[in-house]
Image (cartoon, rainbow over all chains, first blue to last red; front, side):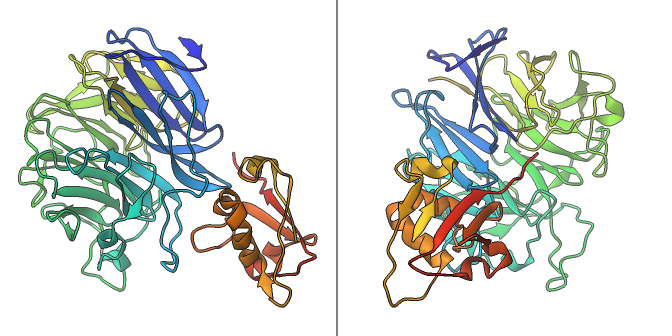
Length: 375
Length: 94
């Protein structure tokens, strides 16, 4: 693989943005995806929890949620594929003075073009949702999440109290789902004015906090819409794998056939209905591939059955984990899949998961992976 | 009052190592308030030293006249117009 100071992708090329605990990298390939160049690291020494690509043909933009252990977190952006970066002097994702909350990290960045051409949402730790109307340059908190009546019952998990998943509905600009750990999956049907927890059917083992024993916290790890049916949502929960066929109102256990119910990421096929991918890990106390053999599991019938895909992946002595935002797909045909590990590997498939290869072996621990075809 | 700006933050202070501000003569001020005041000229420094609630960030050390405020009164440590304030990134990481 070649290294480059900067990349200059052409229309139709692929970029894969990789955020790690020590900076961001951008991988670049043509549509064949048989040869990648690597550029970076950007934000050396900083944790990059989140990334997004805004595919405006005239002004494509890469957004990064970067965190300096010393100097705090913000959203930075590049309009030239990483050659230069903009960091607002005064920051841009901030909790209101007097709220008692201070930003730890930006876990999610999600464009919402149906809500508004330049709208981007950010999810944070502590759990909050922020909205930008200028393509990620400035943000304001969504008050209905910040002041949610159930906030006192939300409890941080090992990774913090994070709003990690943002799913703007692809049909209805007023509808959106978010995932908060450990709180649950919440949906708004009124443009973010109010949010209701949607966890009917999800098994929750623990009682709620002492101030609300009725509030049983749910640790949703990742949710994705089905490619063809936005009423259908797949959920990798902390314990369990689920599907909703009614936009999140209720959930069905679809873990039968999987070797473990524990895992972090979940990817839906970009075009094919009923098709999703998981990376099950051994258990919540041993978060590595089962028996050291790396497998991606795929369903092509919305979770009725699952098949293991491991060709080209390490099948012995592989003891790494794959975090919730470190697995993604591109939009090419056949679809490409990419996942990064906490061991610093980046694996890629150009044939919908049938076969895999490593395209980087020695990165810092990978926090997020996003792929995009340049407009 | 003189602020000594660490090299990592000088891009937010006009590339200056030292930035001076003047306090109102009859006003008692904390170092936290002084950093907020510094932020009028150097918002990028304030943003990176203080969080949204004006607390000194966890991995930043601020010294007032040679004393680490973490072992004094933190951001509430008093300063005067003659104070020397030094900002250091903590030795941290892995």
